[in-house]
Length: 320
Ligand SMILES: [Zn+2]
Image (cartoon, rainbow, N blue to C red; front, top):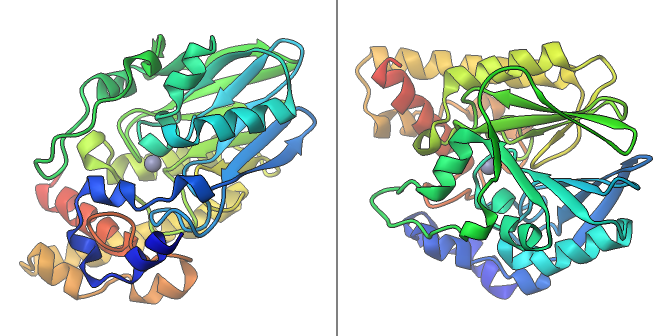
């Protein structure tokens, strides 16, 4: 706990490597909270204030659909939390964990895969995600850590109609999202519970994150938000991988913010500004008070605001 707090205060935070960043988490202090959101559907979240990249709740949120047909899980948290996640699942149901799907490649959602695969779960994911896991992308020239092959997805799918699972009286749609937060995103709709887990292409703690290295794109993120607004009904609860549960109307100001920032960055690019100059212009200013955690460090690149504007600059500048 102490080291994580110190880390936040450290002025050299932005210079830390990806590895050092990950090590700043004190996993031993993190607890897993369980929220029941439908008769047989649960959301599992890590403690607040212990994960510098996700101050609101450590790691990524997990979904658990339980019942006599066995357990279906959405995402698998950090590997270091595997025992605690399993204990939380077991408090919900003693049934076998049969299936697990990943919303996207990031380790706070996938590194726990191997533990659950070894317990018998079949891992589902996009083809792109499997490739990102088998051949991890290097960031800033750093050699990425390998993923445990035991956690590689066994069943993969591409872009197209949703893959459907029928179990525990529920119909679960695995909906491929082309290229938003990453190039291998999936949204998971629980039709009867009327709940959709949307991974990280929407977040309300910190600014949006487009992982260009793993195939994410600004254009795809905007498309994903439009698609989600169409798929979700007025009462559908949307559950992000980080942040609070929302409805589709909450996507509108989020999308508008992205469009406004896009226009600002585009204008600065047209004026010939460099990436550093665009960052120095602090175009997120009007939104900073509305985005909780937006100015907290979000990784080796600095705050989530800087990270987002930097990604936006890169994509808009390249004209993709
Ligand atoms: Zn993510």
